[in-house]
Amino acid sequence: MLDIQLVVAVLFILVISFVGWKMKSLTGSGAIGAIVVGLSIYLGFSIQGLLLLGCFFVSSSLLSKFQSVKKSNLHDILEKGDRRDIVQVLANGGVPAILSLVQATGQSFGQVVLLGFCISIAAANADTWASEIGTLSKQNPRLLLTFKKVERGTSGAVSLLGTCAAVVGSAFIAIGAGLLFSLSWYPIALVILFGFIGNLLDTLLGQTIQVKYICTVCGKLTEKQNHCHNRGLKMKKFSFLNNDGVNFLSIALATMLGLIILS
Image (cartoon, rainbow, N blue to C red; front, side, top):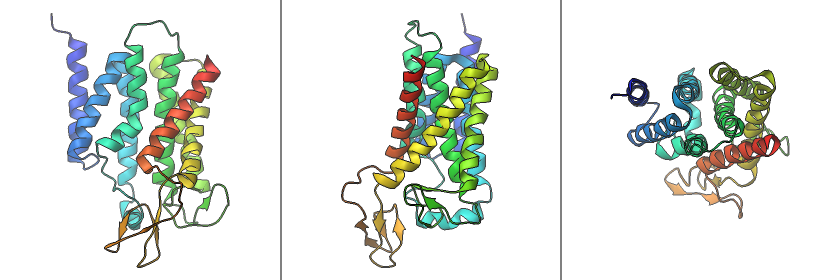
């Protein structure tokens, strides 16, 4: 017998992925990654999980297009553009997908895995909102550890606007999770807190271990290894993660911290 809910879920995943590709929010590989993540989340958390993922994907895609002209200079700094490829999709959606597959095993975890799932999406959303909105700040951001002013878009830097956006972005997912999964105020508050912590961890890791290069031609600090048609100089000897690695690690760490508190 045909499972109507499964058909609806698959169609939802395919449509969202296709629209993301058509809107140039996803590359072809990114759309495939979105399908994989979406199916994994459906297996663990059904339609509610997909809708929460949709809240992240739709809001982040719209924000990436918001005042895109003012963000055009960031392409000179960032390693990748605003179209997410499969690596970027998995960097943001990998932890929620893994937790969904754990949930799909049918073992009894209470609300622990569910809240970890919600935290992971809240952390991804907080970081995305902070990046997309924070770069529109009229003031240059400051590095988290040294408070030195740097160019907008620099990983490891924070601004008041971006920090506020991170809190709101985390709360947006937490409230959505509360409505979809009938959560009480306490777990909602935990999701907001650890979602925001995920953004702070992303900023900290972005300043300390994310790979950055100094262009040997123009002297610009950038995430791109090649700039001005020349190979840049690695800024820190012990930096080893690109932005995708930092995103995945910060989401994973925030989720683990949340799970430790909950367990």
